Length: 270
Image 1: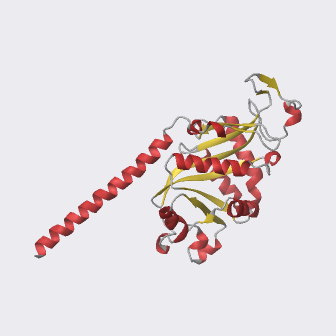
Image 2 (image 1 turned 90 degrees about the vertical axis):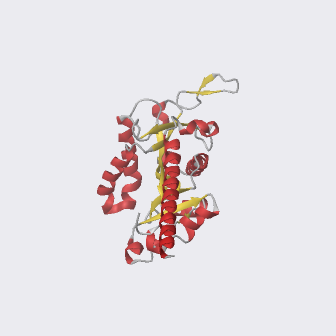
Image 3 (image 1 turned 30 degrees about the vertical axis):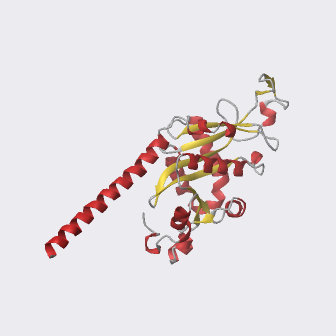
């Protein structure tokens, strides 16, 4: 009897191991399918321009491996302008982290350019923009070739505690295009990209001192503080952390995992 019980236990363990390997392979295949797409944004033609609130912008795609030297310099300059104050004395180390993250093979970018040359009329013919010259229109940080860049989103497809998510690493806009609906537009775009690529939600990290951003995500976009966020750990270290992890999930099962009741003893690991 004991021998049969031992065989049954061994068989169960092998079966569970097989199922776990299959589950992990399915997750790996999901990320691979998303990451090998040549241009993730091409599936959303309606989102490749932004013509509202006095802005005339077009949307471009890039990866960490394809960024030009000028784009890398621009990204770090804009990050520094927007994030140096919220990070405070931690900024020098964080800046180093961001430089590494910026060029990662996993990094995906939504880049916003200001149209300054011409626009297309109702007949599909190019016509000059009504505004002044590029120099008179633009007073931002772009110093590379081509039309001015005025902001970007960096995101990745990743597995967060066994859940496939689109993680927004950066959303940075120049002051000249802020408060014109772009932040909402870009986050909605990220949510659509996540859903299209079978992710289970969108996640991001925000500095507690960046009160405007915290309010924007929680109040306007209805994100929630994730169960994975330090403030939810129930520890002194968690309460003292200077950031929150926010999320928006796409189904009840993922909501239970990332928003509600992730096992407390696992929150600070992985």
